Length: 114
Image (cartoon, rainbow, N blue to C red; front, side):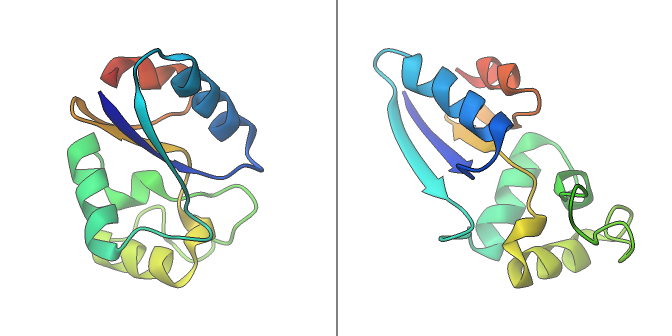
């Protein structure tokens, strides 16, 4: 099985999710440090769609100005535009496998798609 994690090595939840993935035997894992290599707008929209969530549900509010900017209730286009301008607004970690996509908070949510 293939898996891709959009990862921030400074984030404890992201590191914990990565550890779960790395411990999985036979997993073909791709790690994308999304602050260095952000997903395209189209890819990010697809990830949220496949996770069954709105982009506003995937916005990072901790240590950002997302709430003050109204991004937690904004439409998807507005949120995606903001995330493209500031990738730090993307909550992490997002994990994609052939079984789906999850925002892995808590990290154990990754098990749902393994």
